[in-house]
Length: 212
Image (cartoon, rainbow, N blue to C red; front, top):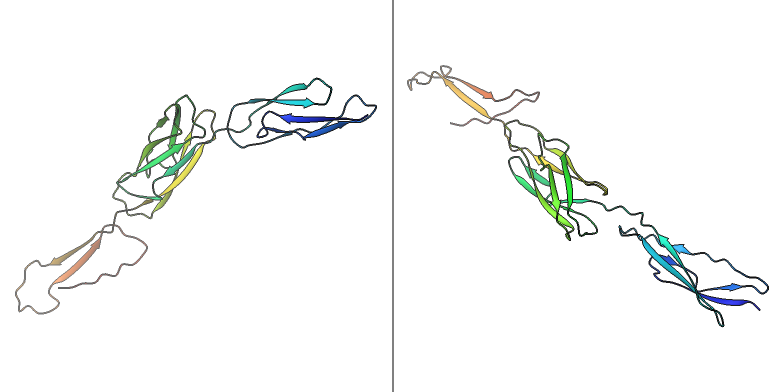
């Protein structure tokens, strides 16, 4: 007679087996497919147990070692998407999952002249995140806003990356001089000459509105 065998897995989140398999009449065995579940969660390797039960037979059991292939990843979350020259900005770096060991995270900026990160930050044991501060150095150059990337890396983790826009706070300086500096009120027109200067010459013309 055929034999109906009931199957079970100790953790269906890791390993799934069919509920039953039938050993045909006249046969000593039957095969079935066990499906390993990829949970996409960085966790430890697991030992799963598959059991087989059939009427009038002693239960059978076998172990299967399910190895984790998911690598923990670092994630960077700045408090805002932009930072003004001379200001600072808080950033959170997180890992998943938290462990009983602290994690030293190395930090780097794509352009240290525009955006400065600390050399490193440590995520404490039993915690999944830590905070640090970005700084945008102040300068006196008139320049366009720039998007600067920064990154976080740690042993055994996939590196994380993010970016913020550094906003320029320098504006063109315009100077005005009059020559001569003192005149009589009856001198008329054309005697006093005015000159305007801009701090840096550019390829664009500059139109100024004058008033007295």
